[in-house]
Length: 254
Image (cartoon, rainbow, N blue to C red; front, side, top):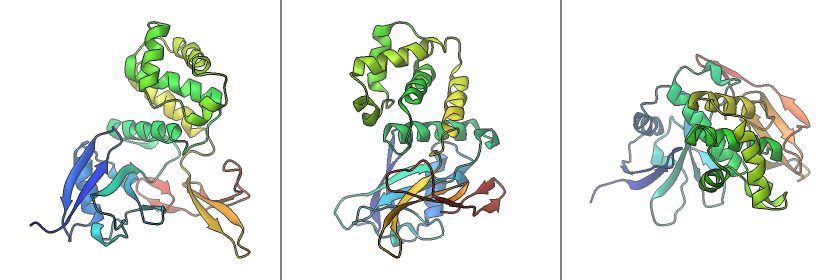
């Protein structure tokens, strides 16, 4: 029987990679392997997350062996997610089309899952851009409603804020019609430009407690480290700028 442990990596395009991770495999080498499936050259922005037995989401440390991390002791494959780890001020700083597309898929997933807090009207506009990217120009209300149900575009929180799904779809359709003629690449760029303007974009939140035992959110991003109230992830109480300068620009080390 081969040494190692079976690992399943969830990719940003919804594919899953299964592989046997050998005991000596470094996390950096795993990143190389996964990046090769996208022909991804700017891999320095990406990493892998996993959930430990306490329910905490953690990042693989690239200088450590994969199997040295505190994975769940439950039987079955190690579950990893391939995600954007390091954000930058603007996608215009990225050099490769593949990298931009992966940032787009990462943002779309984060918004749908509620990892990024977004106002409803902006969600509708973003959903319209996602439709333009995947299906091209608007053809009919019927087709749009059918395609919108297939897309990860409308977060549960947004749906609960409005009278019905039909109302939300109508708002998306209004924005979608205005995008006629926009190319797939333009739709992606405009989508990311809208997302980049949001204060919660690119922030990794961690639940912490101060010396008095009071809970806070610690938000870490390329802008620095912010301290947030439990009920407000948008406006930080304090911000401390801590940056590491690399060849790819200024990014925050998490």
